[in-house]
Length: 95
Picture 1 (cartoon, rainbow, N blue to C red):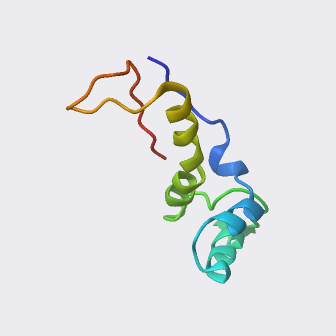
Picture 2: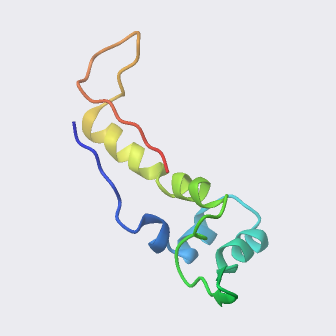
Picture 3: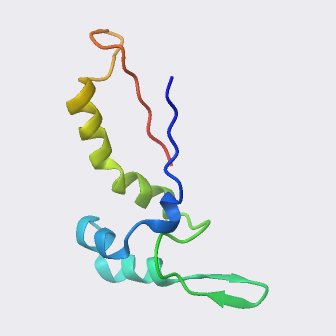
């Protein structure tokens, strides 16, 4: 079993990459990414990554990781299904 954790995934996703590759309204996406967060009456700007605790963050992270599944398929083949156990590899992606 191999478990992976992409350190700083939410903190470091490129705004430019998201804006160029995620099929959402670019104006709305830009506003979400730049919204920042409030703590103790202080606004912290968001320069990189997805909004901490924002409802859109897991969706954006999963969309950004879509290419990872293609890499795993190319390297290890299709995931096991109930009908076929041709490989010894199973993987699950979540954010």
